[in-house]
Length: 250
Image (cartoon, rainbow, N blue to C red; front, side, top):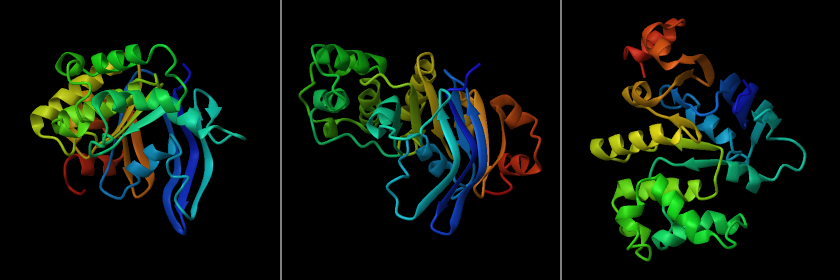
């Protein structure tokens, strides 16, 4: 099976700080992979590598490689816009644009040149995928900023889905939401993995156990252990993983 995403001996430095150390991780298609570990361990840095969001940070240096469906994302003349169309990200706090619901979802197709002819259909499809269409079909001209936080986060996901990506990167997407809203977003992610590959950074180990197929544990920039989620949570091969999951540090 070809991996959807893969890092090979990936190292990343912020100036002299070695943030990622020889990380080799393979992510299967149509799965949810959770990246867990204490604060400052490199989780968010790793997930941002997958669509090169770290590139704009001054003093960054990278060695090793990152592959998307077997092709290096650092190849010559790689189109960042095309990469970020295929690999989109949702952040910790909902960040809808100060535009209408419709314009938020239509934004991606417009900037990627996908808005000819079927823009209304794209917007409707994306809102249906995130369970928002029935609630918002008569409010498409309302400001997205007027929505509840859970709906705002769903709008952000819809904005990605409208450009038909391959991979959804989620950087703690429920940490700003209440437990009921969190449960709704988790249900959405489980449904979306039928069509997308999802990588989620989470501090919530219960969330990782509930929704992910595979889990990767990071510590101090290293990938300590990765495997099927049930195995990681019940039969760890590294004592540091067991110590973290049992709450002895982190």
